[in-house]
Length: 235
Image (cartoon, rainbow, N blue to C red; front, side, top):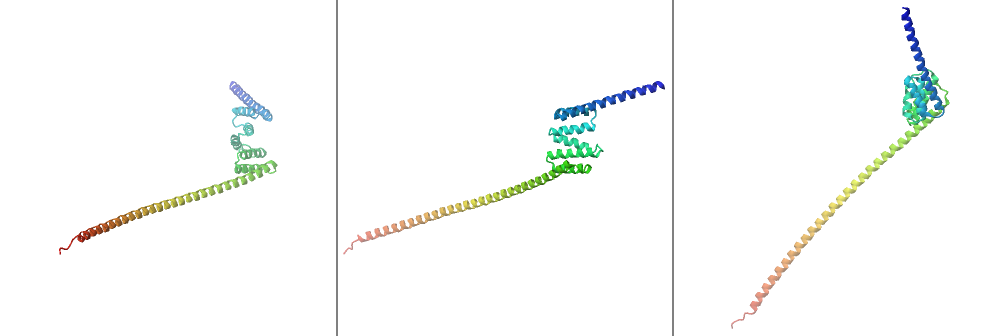
């Protein structure tokens, strides 16, 4: 029994020693990351924060500081994703307010103004007197209004362009129809002229035939008269 207890105590001692070493390594990377962060070496700081998370992927300080380092490197997508996972991990109101504030900043940088406004409002729930958050909220609301106005202007322009295109298409159709009608009319005129010319030619031919017939009749008549004139009476 005594030997068993010694064995259990030995195991616990090893476990707590390992945990303590584990925690020390974790905090060591955080401290080193913080030094680099203050020196504005954000990429190096990120490396150390990630090393701390290899020891404990749910370590709040590691994830929070990593999100800050990513934000400083303008990696707003991953920063906002990390901040979003932290808002429910912390109970302290001030820290929670900071997380929401930084989340709002990430959305603001991505021009996702509605999301940034919601995040700033959440931040002010936990720290209503925070001036920076109030200012950022006001700015985000102003930018949202400007964005909506720009979108409205763009929609109006698109609608106008579509209407102009439709009018132009209608005008082109009308012009094509007019050209077709003019072409048809021209063809009809040409056919009519051809018909008139044909009728004129037929009339001229008929007239020539009549003239020729009259001439032939006259010649025949003159011949008859001539013959008759040469007959002498026998008396």
